[in-house]
Image (cartoon, rainbow, N blue to C red; front, side, top):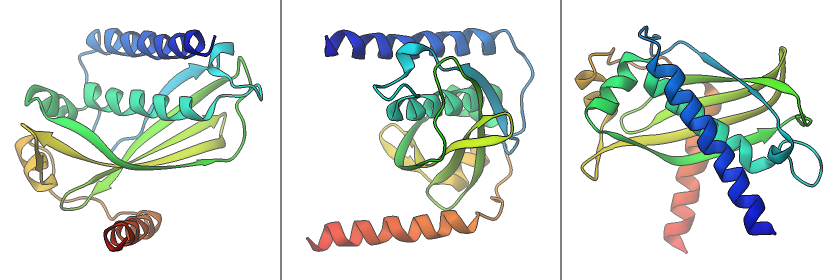
Length: 188
């Protein structure tokens, strides 16, 4: 029983994934790399957990779709795909604020907040109307043939701006926490 439910949930994300790719293949225009982008979704009953709201893990799946949409709709992202760079998530932190009920329509806003020497930082905000329901901060790298590319290489090779916008204070604090976790893991 559990395996069937998991496969149905996974299949649902694949269908949304295919829908997103097909929709973007029909579009020829591109978005600016630092523009926020919104995708519209509905909470279907199989997206819900036993508490009858959008299950925790589904938020992360929607975040994956938001970053894929970014790759498909920006010149920067299309260049990354053309060069066969792989975006790999290094860390994520999610904050749940309000539940999303079955059949609720919501938007997920995805924004590239900026980057440092090595990592890119995205935020996904889950909105129903203008009310925030959850937020995910995501940090990752681009790989080419198994090696990490610096963000300076990535922005230069994609023909985009080389200078990141100022990262929000919450990203600096999160980065410090991640460094501390790495130090604690090395010491133990």
